[in-house]
Image 1 (cartoon, rainbow, N blue to C red):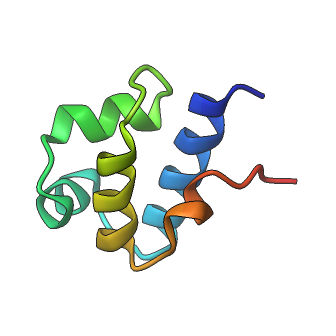
Image 2 (cartoon, rainbow, N blue to C red):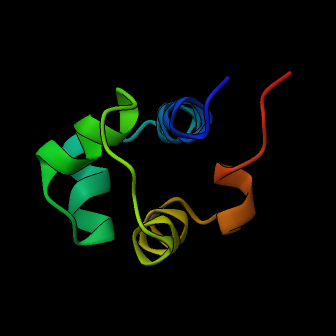
Length: 70
């Protein structure tokens, strides 16, 4: 699995687990809705800064976004 796919799966899983919409996550992370959608589809490669913003909005460690799902 590629890194962008791992990040995509983790963002989607964690967001859904907290019952957030993509729109709410985008607002909380101060990012554009289309950017969040692109990340969740594995089409965008977020920077370390963006991963930090998403992790903070999800209340998880940034490393949680990079852990492969078994």
